[in-house]
Length: 113
Length: 112
Image 1 (cartoon, rainbow over the protein chains, first blue to last red):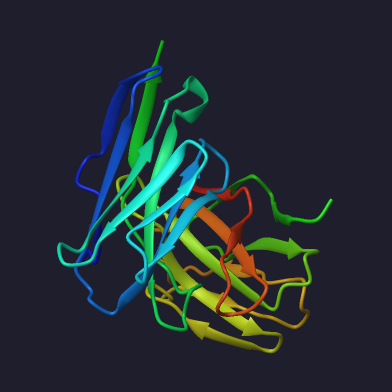
Image 2: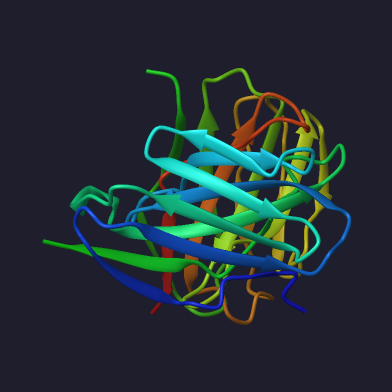
């Protein structure tokens, strides 16, 4: 039972345009959400997070939106750069267990010139 | 430099053999974790340890064992009971159980 789903395995975006990566979850106990970025043969690196008391969190080119009623979050990257090409994982956790994360299957983003 | 070190980067195992993956951190983190990544799947939690001398099973602990005798070390043993051990294994740590986690660079295990 996949509690965190990333339904798009891959996404291709032109440099300078917006990248939108989507994530859906089913567990209503999740209240903390994170995005990780992963290059091949490396560990994931933390990108941005959001708690359920907010609906938006921004950090430079990266913005995460949370729609609790739809159990949906999205990561926006504006403008997209070639160095953003990587696999992006969405992750979620419940109250008090921020580190016991449930991960999505990842979306491979390719930013083309 | 502070960080999480996993060794080796690539590991080969013969069928029927146990193999141990190393994970060391010098971040003074209390909590440590082992995840497994398979193609087309998200990261899945194998074992975690909230504090030294304590560890708990994650979602896919069967065929694996761990120890946490020192704060900085959390080795993972893939036993012969693990039927599909070929995967990318990621070690992670966090200051405590409630904090965001940081990952090592992983070990890719392959069966000969």
